[in-house]
Amino acid sequence: MELRIEQSFARIGLNIKDPFLNLDVSSPRLNLRSVPPRMEITSRLPDISIDQTQCFADMGKRTPIEFMSYMANLAWALGQQGTERIAAEGEMLASIEDGLTVSDIAFENSFDVKEYDVAAVPSHPPEIGFAVYPVNIKVEPGTVETHLEPGAVRGNLDWGQVRAYLLQPPQLDIQYVGKNYDIII
Image 1: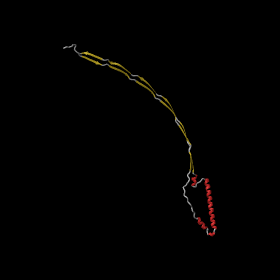
Image 2: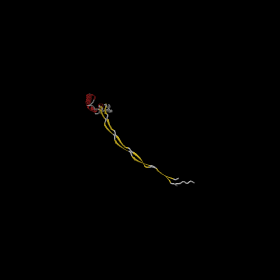
Image 3: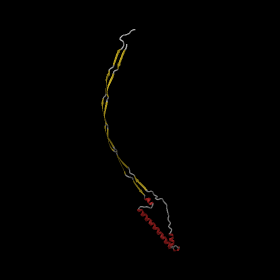
Image 4: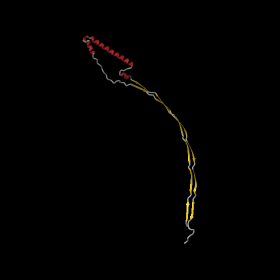
């Protein structure tokens, strides 16, 4: 027996609508208001006192009052020395018996002997004094004020769809293609 079978499979069709998500986004805002910090620093400058009167006195420089006193004492001492020298010369001239003459006294006065002393000037250091005052610091801290406006996301979803339908139904075709009788041997 001969059979011819023809078959075709069913076919399904799909109608597809894609989903769509629409997003509406508003960004957040952060508002800041700041007040900067302040710092105030006040200080009094230090006081420095330098006393050099002893240094200047060592070099022969004096204040006006000290200079006046020094020069008065020096003039008094030089006057005394001059008076002593003149009195001594008068006594030498008065003693004629020793045989001294005016030329001998002039000869003695022609030699001027000077003495020199070497010293480090000044020999006294200056007197230095100082007063230090504290530094006053006043701080006012700054501030930051914030205000947040939150953002938002609004979504609108258009749902997708899948619709299935039968595009081609299945088919089965069976045919007899042989002879219509049986042969028995």
